[in-house]
Amino acid sequence: MLTASGVMRAVRSWRQFDWVRLYCRGMSLFALQGAVVLALYALRGWDTPPAALPLGLQLDPLHGVIHLLTGLAGATFGFLRPMGAMLFLRLFTVFYLGLAVFGTFTHVHFGMQLQLPENALHWFLGSLAALIAFGPNVLAALRGPQRRA
Image (cartoon, rainbow, N blue to C red):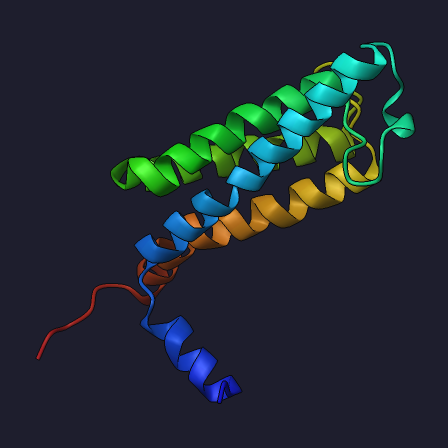
């Protein structure tokens, strides 16, 4: 039987590297979303407004390409080249939080539609990536040097 304490024990036993790989593997869903978005634009025409696409796929073509490329890169590091996953996730964190900042606080959107739904996702996924990629290092630095007995 699955219990909350059992789940917490399992979560605590994972190392940072395991979480990084899991996040990168989950990014393969970005690749799928980007491919579907680009296929819809190819079928409906590149001038189709994003609002005409199904819910969850309402990205402009450039944003779809970014999801496709970052999803493929994340899947590559998550499944095939795990030794590069940490560096990739740290770079992705900076990129995604940068999109969130520009989308939320400026009118510089790099040619993409960055409205509230996109920005909310960027903030959430970028913050989660930052927690996984940088969190343990920040905590270790805040604790200071550890004495070993």
